[in-house]
Amino acid sequence: MSSGKQLSVSSAYSNYNQVELVRGGRDYFERLLTMINNAKHSVHLQTYIFEADETGTSVAAALCNAAKRGAQVYLLLDGYASQNLPEDFILDLKKAGVNFRWFEPVFRSRYFYFGRRMHHKLLVTDVNYSLVGGVNISNRYNDMPGTTAWLDWALYSKGEVSAELYNLCVEIWNKSGWGKKKKQILKTEASFHMHGEECLVRVRRNDWVRRKNQISRSYLEMFKKSTSHITIMSSYFLPGRNFRRNMAQAVKRGVKIKVITAGTSDIATAKHAERYLYRWMFKNNIELYEYMPNVLHGKLSTYDGKFVTVGSYNVNNISAYASIELNLDVQHQGFAEKVEAVLNTIIENDCVPITEQEFIKHNSFIKRVWQRICYEMIRLVFFLFTFYFRQKS
Image (cartoon, rainbow, N blue to C red; front, side, top):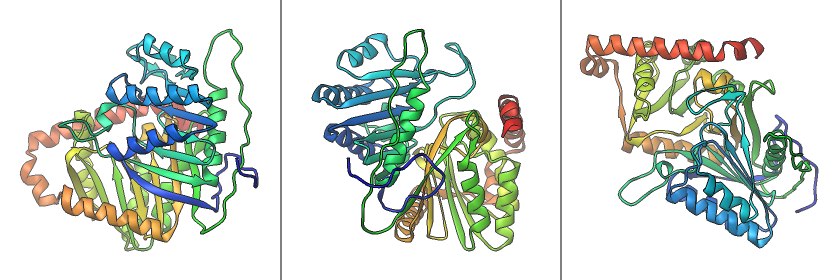
C-alpha cells in the first residue's frame, strides 16, 4: 500500500486517478478476473446477483485461488437477489478461505422482501484498483457461446478513489451479516496517493437508511449545469416528477437531451410503462432512441463533454428512494469526450430513433391504453414501496 493522504468515504472529488470505461460482457469479466488473479493482499467483491452458472463458477474459482494465495477475500451478496445460490457452492467458497456474508433486507422471504436491497456492483483489489458498474455475476451479463451479453458498463479506476471504495466496502461489510456469533470487524481508513495527471472522481451513493441521495443530486446537477447537451443511457427509465421538471427546464434553456432506452427489456411491464412516458419526451423535444441488439441494462450519462456518471443507478424511484446504489462521477474532458463518442456510435449503429409520428403509427390506441395501465400500476408500486423512504429523504 502506497503512503499518502488518508481518504474516507466522502462526497468530494479525489484528484489523482486513472479511469477507463469497460463494456459489459467479455471485456468486463476478463478485467474482473484479471484484477482478482493479480490481487496480492485483499479482494472485496459486493454484488446484487451471483449465480452458480459458468460465469459465477469462474469468478468463484478466482476468489478461492486468491484466498489460497494468502489474499484476504471478502464476498458480500444481496440476501434477496442471490438467495438461490446453492449451499454447497457457498460452503466451497468458505472452505477455500473466502470470507462470505449476506446483505439482508429488513424483512424477506423467497418471494418478497421489504427494505433496502444492495443493488450496487463493486470490486476493489489491493486498495488501489476498483471496478464499479451495473454488471451482475451471471451468464446474462457475459458473452457466452452463441449469445451476446446484455449491454452494460463499469468504470475501472486506479488511484485515490479506489481507497475510498475500499473504505466503503469495509463499512458495509462490518454492518452486514447476522446471528449471535460475534462478527468479524475490519479496520477502515486505507489510504493511497498517486501523482500525475489530474482526473477528478467522486463516489456517489443512494441509501435511504444512511440518508444518502448523492446520485440523484448528481443527475439534478447535470440538468441544471449543462449548457449544451446531455446523453442518458438508462434501463427501466421512469423518471419521477422532479427529474422530469429539471429535464424540461434544461431543454427550455437550449440544452439538447438524448435518451437511450431499451428496445427489448427483461421486464415487459416496465417497458410498456416506459413507453407511456415517450409522449412526455416528445412534448418536451427530447430525442429518443431504442437500443435493439439485446437487452439494455446499462446506466451511463454524460453532459457537455466534461462529465460522466456510471454505476448501478436506474432513473426511477426504486433507485432514488429504496435501493443501495453506487455510481462514480468523473470530471475530465478527455474521458467524457471518449464516452460521448461511444454513446454516439451506439446511437448510430445499434439504435432506432423513435419519433412521435412513428410511435403513433406503430402503437394503436389499445396499446397506448395498455401502456398507461402499466405505467399507473408501476407508479402505484413505486409509491407504496418508497412512500416511507421519500418522507425520510
